[in-house]
Image 1 (cartoon, rainbow, N blue to C red):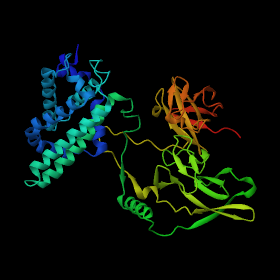
Image 2: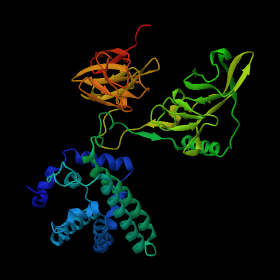
Image 3: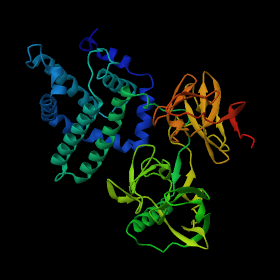
Length: 456
């Protein structure tokens, strides 16, 4: 059966069963409210009026580019006008349906089906449209709809213009997410994602934003510093370095070309241990993804406007001292967040918080990984066919985060360089890593798992 021969009912049935739940979840996440639904309805006739022009521009754009044009051509290379008109008919009906503001289970499953139809998961496995073109065309429609609304409403009803442009923009975000689900397995609602919501206290949040902005301009109050002795001069000879910990702060101290440099051991890209990377001239290269920094200034080579945190180094009486800004007392969690009852009917009762080394069993489905902490050490917990195992989260090759890797049976694959480990024993199963990872014992009590610290 080809994609063209499916009825509307068949297309709806082929959409994922959880599409309605996912639609509601994403609408809630982007802030698409009942008022936005009403704004879509109120502007529906305007969208219908402009649909012929929008659809014309939409398919004109598709036919301009070879990767998308090829799906509308006959074998002789000419445009298949009948097929093109059929696609125009379906697209027009979809946006007319959307403009009614009825976003029910059938609507969600149909959008999910359309997304799958663009991939090898659809009714016709010979059809594949790269995700980038789906993203581009949704953006095209979003721009076209916004222009139509502004053209009709800017002078006549600016309030409706504002409300409807907002509503359609948010809706297009949701539609894009639904269409993108078929391209990966990331577009799911994981256990524990839907629970009691948090009400944000905007005053301290705004103050944090203002402080951040002012510090970026070099404004604000001067920080207070504390001095810490971190090594003797003899411990860090010329050309060497030492990684030191001050509280939870990891710092690389370098003796480089007769100078002393101290940088925060936290890459600006994804937090990699940048201070452990190799040095080429004055360039420090992060071992995770190769981001490069000028070791003498901390500036990123490709973007000098961003830089690593540097700390003043003082040499006194054959000892190395660092001047570290005093840690300001953080705002109490309660001043930023207030737990409230979720407004969604699907919201579940908030689970009580657990110690850092514990987890709820249902939060780690079979084949998944979750990060916990054991005495400040990051530990990855794996569900292998219903049995839980735990290892140190840092790969022994370049400290890649194993919790972000792939679990294949009882083997975890590091997301950085592909090193593989047996999570049941910690043994290396494929390089470039050549050292095993530390394992931890997992105990299960009822619906809670606990990772036990290893004895020293």
